Length: 286
Image 1 (cartoon, rainbow, N blue to C red):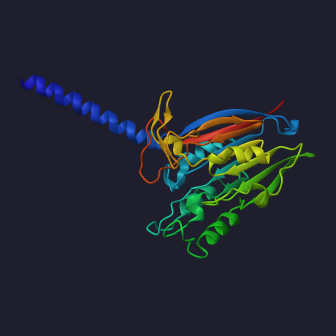
Image 2: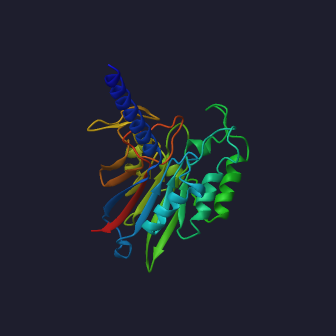
């Protein structure tokens, strides 16, 4: 009887230890997802152009100064980095809120151009509820620090990237929290016969993005559905259960959308079969 109880105890203890190890590995073991994307109007000069996509860090740290995340990015050697929001948490209770991303950017040593759009946590920085705007100046001060480190913060803006005599366009939609997306009013028209890359935190407006003329869209927000099951996919996201856009590559008309499962967690630290993710998109001409 004593031997049987001892055996059961050992089995239960082993299961418990394995469960704890698995839980923490899911929160802290960074995965790298590689995607090749063909675009009709991509100039040959941009064939092989490598983009690292980061999203939803939520003040998460992977080692001191995010050194493990920095090491992964440096190993990839991207041509540019795009960031699609919620890199901090909207809370008064966090000292030096946003400093984790600032340190991450600083530790990348200005090796890569970085383009950033906000999510609801940046746009509502320190809001009391969704009917009140942020404390005046808080978001602006944070963005100014990013710009001082060389980050292009795109608040409904466009930039052009050139290689030799060819170019592609990067458009950034800041998080608008609610209401109509109003693409043309905010960004103007997309550029015909050129590649238009759109950064926007929320993937749920994919039809509006496609209708506007985005060739390639980078988005985040859904955290991969937190708990991912085979075939079913992610269980819960910011928009409810069983999101259509829990992570991966999606096609609509001639547009392609890449949705990151994110790096951090909010409001609870929970990831099952859903490790933190860096996405690497390599552009291919047709």
